[in-house]
Amino acid sequence: MSEEKHLITEQHRYLPDPDMAQSTWVGDYEAAYAAYRADPEGFWEKIAHELHWHREWDRVLEWEHPHARWFTGAKTNITYNCLDRHVFGSRRNKVALIWKGEGDEDERIFTYRHLYIAVNKFANGLKKLGIHKGDRVCIYMPMVPEQIIAMLACARIGAVHTVVFGGFGSAALNARIVGAGAKVVVTADYAVRRGKSIPLKHLIEEAIINAPSVEHVVVLRRQTEQPIEIHREMEVDFYELMEGVDRRCPCEEMDAEDPLFILYTSGTTGTPKGIVHTCGGYMVGAYYTTKHVFDIKDNDVYWCTADPGWITGHTYVVYGPLMLGTTVLVAETLPDYPTPGNYWSILEEYGVNIFYTAPTAIRMFMKMGEQWPNEYDLSYLRVLGSVGEPLNPEAWEWFHTVVGKKRLPIVDTWWQTETGMHMITTTIGSPMKPGFAGRPLPGVAADVVNGNGESLPPGTAGFLAIREPWPAMMRGVFGNDEIYSKYWTTIGNLYKAGDLAIKDEEGYIMVIGRADDLIIVSGHNIGTAEVESALVSHQSVAEAAVIGKPDPLKGNLIKAFVTLRVGHQPSERLKNELTYHVRITLGPIAMPSEIEFTDSLPKTRSGKIMRRVLKARELGMDPGDLSSLDE
Ligand code: WT7
Image (cartoon, rainbow, N blue to C red; front, side, top):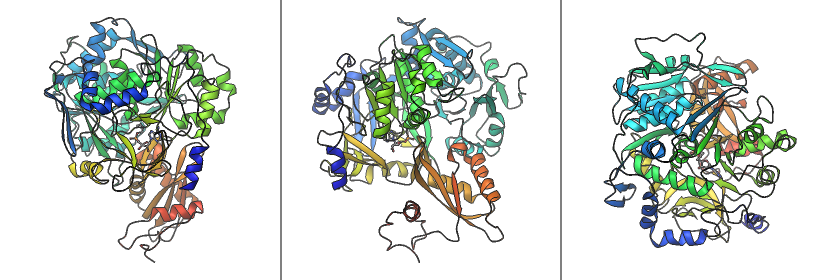
């Protein structure tokens, strides 16, 4: 571990600009953390009191390892806190959403009143389709306001949404629809990318062939000139569904522990895991972290570049910022289209104050050059944020210098689909250290431990774990309590995050990467097993093993080793065919960048593919212990 120690003592340290650090916590991280440790339940209870509840809780926490129940007995509805509070309070005509498309004129603005009406009407529309509390609704849409309206409408009537990122292909979509048993799928005719329309609807048609739970498909037709055909026996137009319904739909009074949504994330088994989040605890965690980590002020314009199809979008595009009554920018655009200055031009145009993005985007900005951000007025910016994978020191320095002009705080937020909310970051006002996400937020008992759950001394790499339950923690893996329990029973009785990390003397945590078989490509979590099973589903493939290879831009790229069935010959053409096959089954984000044909794969005696051997060979490293390798 001597190398890591060296790395830590050589670290840079940036003190926050005193004028910039006007946060609720300025300089007070230690006090807030101590208050949490002194009375964890009291700490969370105080935060919960800032929100509206139809009925308050009997108990803050009931913890029967590994199952937690937060705010038991309480009744609430998260959309009351996202909408009604503002509309019937002081923000009725405040802008809630600014949607920005690729074209200069592509802009749509929703005040809180507009959003409230749209959500209420769509909620009543879902009721017309026979959707009740507890039913699952799959949302497979591009980044348009209707995607957010559909999510909130589900939450309003107690339907459980399961949002599937619009970049997934039909097989991945089918697995999620079937897994969740969705009764309704909400989709759109197309998404827009680099000036092109990407049709989505045919993917839905394929995805529901073997999905008997689906009763209706709601289709948003963005193309109004020549609208695509609606197959009335099953399908209904998004806006027609909202016609003739009441403009008010009362909130379903949800139990704090009722499910709010299921969000699928890649697992190590090849089958994605449906992470379940609940109404009360998730609401409190999303609210608290959005408020304190980003230090949002009432006049701020806030832009999180994530798609609502990921957890980052759920918590920090939709629920968190809307609960705070924030003006949220949503952009269906890419960093480098139509010009490499696109994001900077948006930041200038809308006077964005808080900009939350991903390391993969930051590395792309670096590659395109600082002349692009330098061309725009970014002086409105107050807070920069990053999420999804480690923000390497080089990218941190660039973001801080070129975008933050050496003044702005960077909140590098570590968390997961499973945690529901930020867990580790450098709070505004604390010294910043490039390469380190930061310290556990008050309310979060994160630590770096050995395999038995014992705390490791500074400078020693180990497992990232959480010692105590927190309100926004997942309550389960849909339909699989065994997988859920594993999170809390593998390392003593702590929550195992699956990441490796290292702590320094001041308790700052550097996240090194995944400890298991997940590859993070451009901030997206791809399961090796998912890509492998997609490859093996091709008629020419006998076996496949997939590894991640470090890549300066994407963080990692996917390399696949493939053995062919007899009668099939390796060829460039077959490589292309296999890549295409993964594209249509899993979607473009899971496509291998490299494919190598091989006669055999290294395996353990029990037949498990030893990916680390392939990876070591590929990267010219020591493969480590080979005793279990089958010759
Ligand atoms: C995994 C969770 C939660 C938002 C997006 C991804 C990695 C996430 C950081 C960060 C280092 C990070 C971890 C984590 N990760 N944020 N700031 N620094 N690594 O959600 O798909 O559930 O992936 O992303 O490896 O376990 P997710």
